[in-house]
Image 1 (cartoon, rainbow, N blue to C red):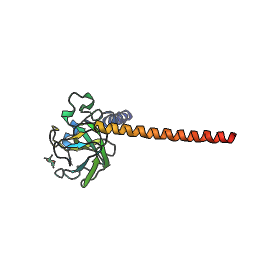
Image 2 (cartoon, protein in one colour):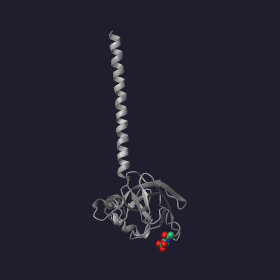
Image 3 (cartoon, rainbow, N blue to C red):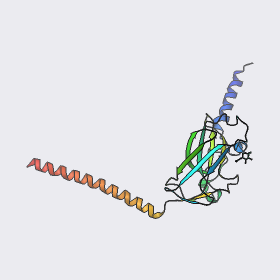
Image 4 (cartoon, rainbow, N blue to C red):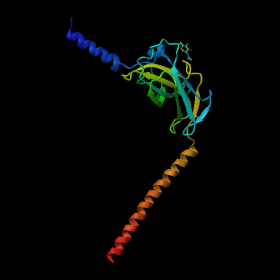
Length: 205
Ligand SMILES: *[C@@H]1O[C@H](CO)[C@@H](O)[C@H](O)[C@H]1NC(C)=O
């Protein structure tokens, strides 16, 4: 029997499951199927804007074949270790992944492949000083996270590395570079107007 009300209810329910209700990190714990490694040694300090991280990821082959049949995209993120989240509400881990602040930003997003994935990322200049690890999420074609992997253990204590933000000296160099650029643009305009006025003056003679 096709009951239209039942049909409508089930459509609404699947909408609620798929989109209205966010995926939680705890719901992915049995789907830790990606093996993620990072190049820095434990505790190594990398300089933002200068040093690079190489990340590799692959499917953990101990999972039965077909585990990854709905994986479409892999999103690799750089994430705060607990030591750098302490007393910082804006980096808080929230189980609802839409609200989670553990991961600062995406390193790369690529179509899913079970193996042979390597990406070298030059640490962006605006990455703050902190201790980090790398996490990868697999998303299905509806952009719902269905699996993950990370370069650290479940307590986020092993294989951590540090990033040191650009030092004050570099920032002041940047600022003086900007000042010089603005100055040179202004002087260009200055010359342009002076030339214009000169030529106008000579025309009037
Ligand atoms: C692969 O998954 C199994 C089962 O979850 C786990 O015991 C093993 O450590 C994983 N292998 C790697 C390299 O992470």
